[in-house]
Length: 200
Image (cartoon, rainbow, N blue to C red; front, side, top):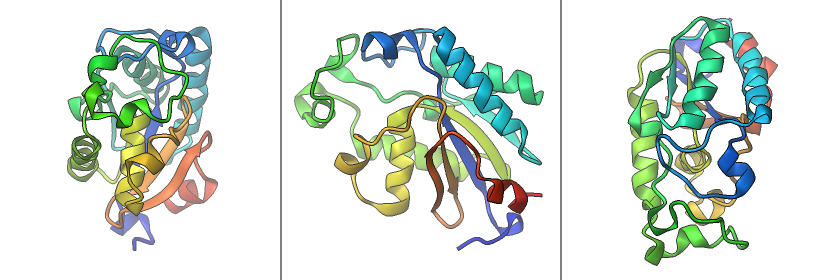
């Protein structure tokens, strides 16, 4: 298990800020889908301040979906980096649920194969590919709730049903040490001070 910045690779995943789709309860993976709300912009601004406290950042990446792209651009402006868009960070494809109102029982619709949602194993595979292959020792990546949950599953193998209903909140962080497949932080709105110290 990694214990210093010299033998670790830290990927800091941040979920996009609140979007118009979040507020209206619309399921959307469309690239040019819903924009950030005013609250989402404020959340992204706060997340950017947290990220700016890191002593070094080797790269800023983002899903190309509008709400993530806007979040990454706010972060990038604060830290002086242009986001690189990577399709592996893109929102999970929601199949026949695309564009529909989110069902009241949010915990079940993703698990019904009739809905043709992108299989969890495929989602996890593309996210693990990203964290393993992205260059740098400290990387920030703006993505989506299920994508981030799949990385948590990679660290503990508790499965889709456990993780997909524990979606990180808007502009909260999931932080992983890739070399040790170690989850450092889950669904937090602050980057741990211990990590900042470790990376100095």
